[in-house]
Amino acid sequence: EPIKYGDVFNVSGDLALETISPQAAAAMAAVESRVFGQQQRGSPAAAMQAAAVINEASGQCLVGRHGIAEMAKDHVISVTQTSAEGRRVVTEEIDG
Image (cartoon, rainbow, N blue to C red):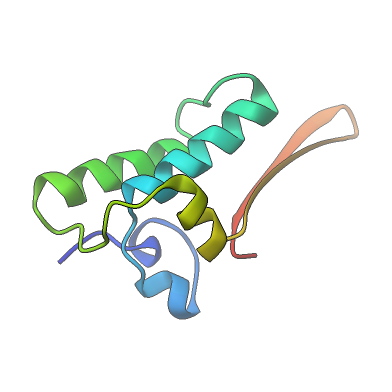
């Protein structure tokens, strides 16, 4: 059984049942890098990349290899950073 979003994140609905693909992990890492200047250690993108590597290595990644642009068309990925009372607040979302 491939690793799905619901196995790693607190999500529900169709997204929870979807396999974490290398393309989705790469897209999240790209967004993190754009916002923070580099990928963050222990971040959602790092968790997605680890899951995608396991899925591919085990032959369980049942999604095709298509470009990040195609994947981005299927999912809305966003990372925002704000300040609140002198603290940095980071929100990362896939499909809301």
